[in-house]
Length: 166
Image 1: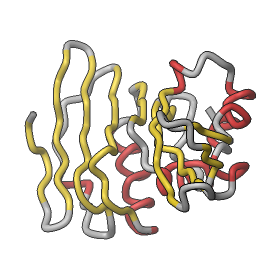
Image 2: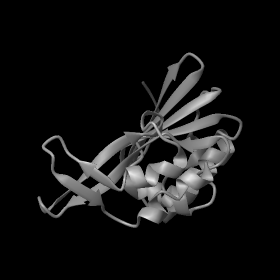
Image 3: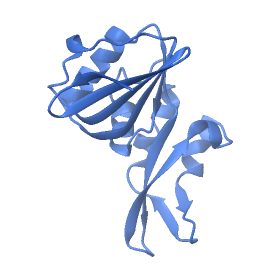
Image 4: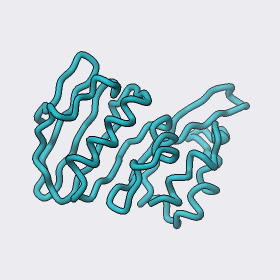
């Protein structure tokens, strides 16, 4: 793992694996995310991993889209481990989702009245065993390992808007 960007709020790492590259964001993406300082090795397939992303603000959204457009336009991009707050943004802001940019795995927010608690559950689209039109209804409810029921916590139509875009 090679660090390609370091600020006081954000680190960006790259891991090369044969014909693909994994970019790992760790920290906060905001107006300090300076795309001109980044040197990455371009590959045909890039996985952008947001599992360690802590926060992104509106300036960070613009900077990230600009980064994708400038450096990664001619590549196939898979967004993985997307936190729910980022999925909402990807569904609403033009430029995140494109023919060559797709969400592959993401966290879904759930709430249980029975337990009076919330949780995030990670899903990978390829392992759901259904088409995009069925994902929203399949993920509207969740049962944990103890059999407790959870309901989607948020605006489900807005959250899953990305399915119509990719």
